[in-house]
Amino acid sequence: MENLGVLTPVLGVLVVLFFIMISSIKQISEYERGILFNFGKFRKILGPGWHVVWPIFQSYSKIDIRTKVVDVPEQEAITKDNVSIKINAVLYYKIFNASNAVIAVENYNYAVSQLAQTTMRNIVGSVKLDELLSERDEISKNMCEILDVATDPWGIKVENVELKDISLPEEMKRVIAKVAEAEREKQAVITKATGEVEASNNLAKAAATMAAAPGALHLRTLATLNDLSSDQSNTVIFAVPIEGLEALKGISDLAKAKSKDNENK
Image (cartoon, rainbow, N blue to C red; front, side, top):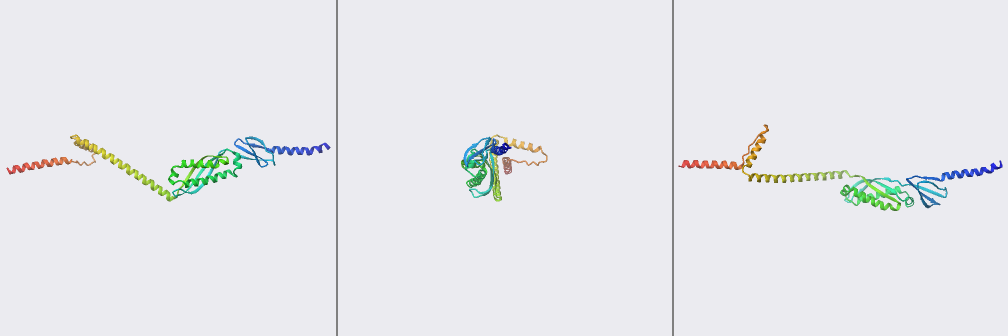
């Protein structure tokens, strides 16, 4: 009985130590990194696997190093040419230095989101509306580079930024539609004028060819009449060339002159 009384406190201590040991074992997954602190001071980065972290004396924080997605909320901004728009984006980043992500910034996810909103408004304010609409890829690339430089001290690598949607006021939408319509009308007029120039050049060449070949105009007239005769519903108006009318008039004048001469005789 005396031995049992002595062993009881020892067993109690062993049980407590066992539970402390069990609770001190921490698991770090493959996609995580652990930041170990000794008495509040940074010691090292814990890799994947099981690690012993003694309570009271040590503490640790786990950081997910997988690529994270930040949905940058819609922001109101004014372009360089004073057009008010609403724009949002999506940002992809990854932690490459877990210790800096914990020590250098309080909440890295919130910090990246706020920095992305501010940067997006600044970039939109430095470009015109036409540039923003036509060069979205280039603007996204510039925004990614700026954010990557700003977040580098935090141990964060900004991998990509994509502008999702650009909302314009209804008045501006109508103006852009009118500009596009005017541009299409301009192109239609230019195309029509170009066609008329080409047609007139071809007609001039055809007329010159017919004028140089005797009988070509007459053959062309006969060919036209042949084409028209295939459809009985058409009304054919025979066009007599002015030269033929002048020839007939000359013959008539000559006949009249001979008639007068005969009467005088």
